[in-house]
Image (cartoon, rainbow, N blue to C red; front, side, top):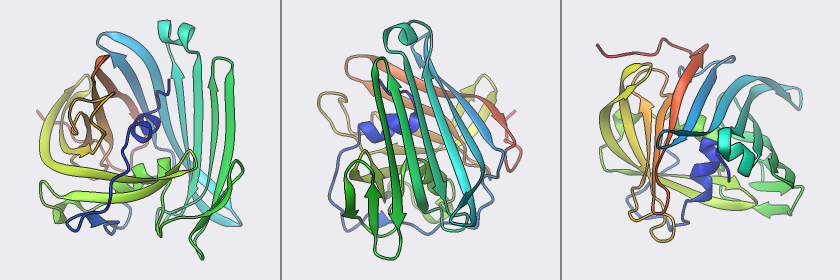
Length: 261
């Protein structure tokens, strides 16, 4: 059981071919969405039951003498889920401050008695990755990882994207290439414990079948301000029902979070 919002997304995407109307790797804006020191905390709930917590931290890092962003995602089960599963997952990524492209990522997974570690480095000159688990392999140009893809999306200029258009970004996760396709579905106001927030609504394309009934049963709402923070992630799972990952705390954002009256 993986409760980190990034792991949830990655574990249920279907690999789909690129379509002619897809917007592939849209250019990103100059970064005004996030800064070093940003901290985002989320609760994961099945109905009223708290299943886990996820925290996303952004710090300065050094990679080969270059100052880069260093993101740290820590996910842990809580309550009964912790007694049953005992999950602590840590995912780290070192990515470029200008391009948002990763140089290295590291994963540490502990789920009950199961433990896993891997480290992946990215060679931008020849478009390869080097995984400690599986070695060197060719990957698409501009490949992202789990953390950098989230921050990349926060820098996309949605004012240039029409409602209903599909964006495609490639990411590397669990020693596989995942084409991450999502539909931009316009704007929507979301009520949270923090207040009402105007959001951009995006729907990653998921596989219909064992987990989901419909291809849009995973939805992400990003704050419609200069931060583009993930406010709410909702999964409508065939067996479990509605699962929500909600922002409950934020610190050191690049801009004040905008609340509606």
